[in-house]
Image (tube, each protein chain N blue to C red):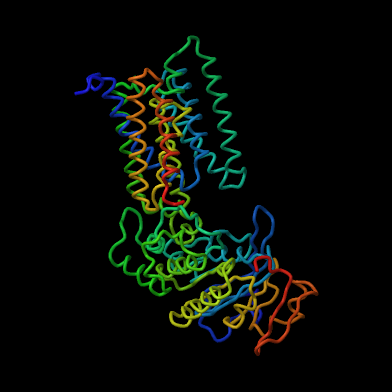
Length: 275
Length: 266
């Protein structure tokens, strides 16, 4: 316990830590991506993850999924070392990768895409049972798209497709939801309703949520804490503490503007490539 | 019974077409959806190099072809996994190197061997009874592989990363798919030849994708198109004395453009 994380790195008012990084570093082909991370995420916490392009946001999610191993230190989820996760642990993590639109000609229906969330639990050589189909249907109902179940997925709008992928994650019956820029490339009203859906799932299902985004202003009212990355953990804490000129300027440059809007901080930074 | 069906060679050719068409269509669907067309081409040529080595060593050419085919897909994918080389670059290297090897092995043979060239351009009308059994056996292995891993193959074709993240053994499943591609190519090598075999993997599946957005329907359409072009090509080549392999592929290509023209997706 020599490298105990500082107090701000511990989750406030949330359950026991479900994800823990202890001095963990990650690299791609020897190029460092994230350096000496030490923080934890509590069960049932809603954490927003922000930072410029290439700051390691996606790497953070891949590290939690165990898709990359740390070059030093330790990353753990559910008390298991991430990169040694067994399949049944992976199924407890719902993941929405950052993605472009589905090929409109790919042969998969909305329902089939959601049912895929059950595949790892079903296991090899077995067909989905009635119970799996019911879980998929109820997940689809939860995101409000049950009536589109037989439509080709590629024919849905970007926002609808993201809802389908959230439904797939829910069909896994996860405890943790990792969302990588789910609101990128969809229009503002759809972004707001997607965030409302995620908030409802957080509240009603007690899911632990990591929401990676460029859109600081969209998510900050919803989250318990914000983590600011820039090749390392620059700061973590409640939005009011992170969204200050002093914290943001070293990362986003002196052009970062923090003003007040509707009782909260409103941030303008020069990194909105996707906006 | 029509006259051409009385010939044993024609019966064997049609039986071989039935199996090869079904397997090429089924695997081809995943090849097209997962974007593996180029490795299909590379593997076909590497399998041909395996055939030439088999003749040179005096062992069964389908055995050495299978070893070369599997070696190619496994090494290319392993290089890709370790980020040593881009996928298309390593396929390209194997593609050209294996053609060089084939020419090298042919050069080492003391006599001209017409049978070797049969594997390059296809000779479905000279499939023997023993080869037909081999095709049937390997075909059964290939189709069972698809049936057993159908849902996993669908998932990794759709999104490899998401499949892996959700706990599917995505990398082994991809290796399985690549191995099935190699198996299918070896199985079809004698019938349609190394130059054209991968066309039979790609064209019926690509045409079928124009016609439907259901995986099962796509597979059935692809099988129908593969059988249609193989049977049709055989008859045309019989009636007009045309080279069978080339006629089959050209017919399949014509069906592809027909499918694009009538596609309900536009």
